[in-house]
Amino acid sequence: MSPFDIKPTEENLLLALKENVLDRNDDLERFYNLLIAQESACSIALDGRWGSGKTFFVKQEKLIINAMNSLSNMEMGKRNQILGNLKSIHYDESNQENSALAIYYDAWQNDNDSDPIQSIIFEIIRQIGMQYSFADETNIIECAKSILNHFAGRDIANFIEILNKEDPFDSFRYEKSLEERFKGFFSEIIAERGNRLVIFIDELDRCNPTYAVRLLERVKHYFDDERITVVYSINSLELQHTIKHYYGIDFDGSRYLDRFFDIPVGLPSPNLSKWYSKIGFYSGDIQEEICKRIITFWQFELRDMSRFYQTVKIATKNIRQGRFERPEENARFAMIEFLVPTMIALKICDVNAYEDFRNGRRPDILVDLFETEYVARHLTSILLENDESYENADGKILVSKKEKLISFYNAVFNQEDTSRNRYGEIVVGDCSFNRNSKNFVISIVNSISMFAEYN
Image (cartoon, rainbow, N blue to C red; front, side, top):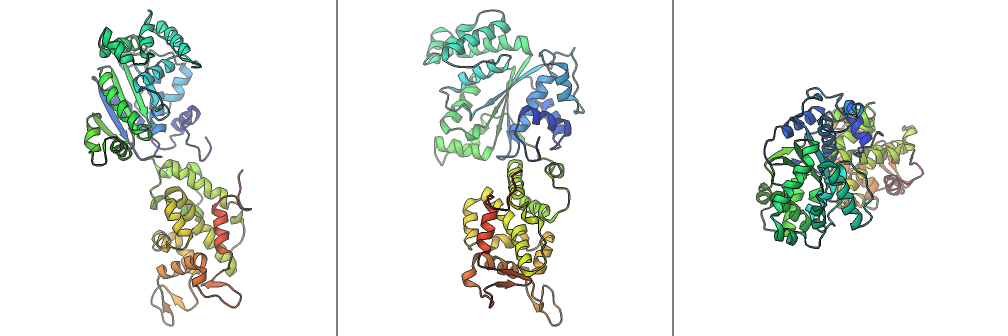
């Protein structure tokens, strides 16, 4: 795992379990115990903001569930790799009572499929033990036949053939209820692989509204089986917006979703101290402290933290190697250490605010970020004139940090309204800004300046 990489590859999932990078191993164990404790049909909503690490969390949980399943054919070395750093759950080959089979389904990746139930069924078939290239519909059916016959010991390919018809639900109406068909299907699968099926449905809040609603309603109706737990990893606020797009802006999306989720669970927050250490926030460098302040101010989630810090490092690594002593160097220090990270963060979280900031309309952002912050003590000190002070002092003009931060901002972004000295420079305290200051900052923020470092 690279310092900035939180992609949920198996390598990263295993490394994060081993090193407990996010300090979530205890949460994973508690969530496992919650899932195993269910004795009836159950749906759980795992709620977290976009970028908070929901996909990473549920894919780790899937690994743990399947590693704890004594009926699975997972190699012992891999079981130990998954479970070796967990405290309260331990593998027991003789214990088959809590043997669950976990499946992961990316709803967003599949929301072009005509029917979510058919899509989930094929994903279950794919994950229970056979890699296959689904080149055409015939191959899907043949693949399904071989897999299901292997696990069930008898030919139930007719089930798959019905699912592949233009309207499989009409076909079922002529034979027997779809619910009974699904119960038979799950009985055949679960009998060989465990006594419970846990289906993680991810990214539902990113789906088109029609598919999202159809999936929720059909899963509730057709997966109502005491041996099945469905876990939806969602951003509940975004999912409510999706529901309103389907049913209308005045529709109560929250009450509607309550119908589908038996147990709401909030995704635990990561341990930021451990995460900061992982991505390199450990030296006490001023840039790191400024980045921490920005992350806290905008409440960045894990994905945005990684994007933000990686971009700041790329944009500023080479230029930060100089000395900052003379007025023009102090100005560069102020721009590089404070304006550049602020603008990179704005591009990530609010592009409209970024445009306003770079065009001289939002000095309040800089003030709100740094007026009262200890990390800005050097900046606010070099913005003072010799006869100015932030506190009452004999012979000094009392000024506020707010007005000096605004003067700094205007010296860069509103130069036409700011007076210059005889050299054409704008001086704020011990900082000297020139006509190119704004373009200098923007070029660094764009990460393709001569100062960028990509290695």
